[in-house]
Amino acid sequence: MLSCKEPATGSQPEQIAELGEKQDVVRVVDSEEFSSRINAVGDVQLIDVRTPEEVAEGTIAGAINFDFRADDFTEKLKVLDKNKAVYVFCRSGGRSANASAIMKELGFSEIYDLEGGITAWKADGKETVK
Image (cartoon, rainbow, N blue to C red; front, top):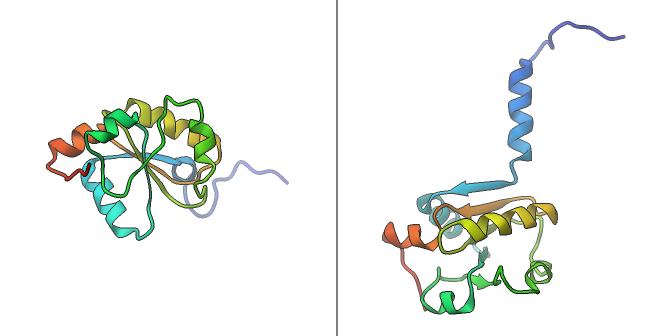
């Protein structure tokens, strides 16, 4: 039997908001949150999607380079655990946003994209390694 009566617990807007949160696989976070999260996780999947030449100028400690512009980019993603959080960054946020969209399409469940890329990371006084 169908009814137009409101559900007994929670309103419809609240239920829709909860659904939206569950579907929000990609989160764009600032350098403070990004840093806190990667430091809190022991074995982090930290991906730098810049070119090898850009990476040679400095990257975040522990990052693996998967060049977004390389022909084998999508193939390289297959070595990652889709059920574990992935942290991704580039120079300023464009390539990492595109990479995050690809990862979402491939079924990754939790993706953190560094807002402003390594440029913002450095501007906020965070360390890089060569």
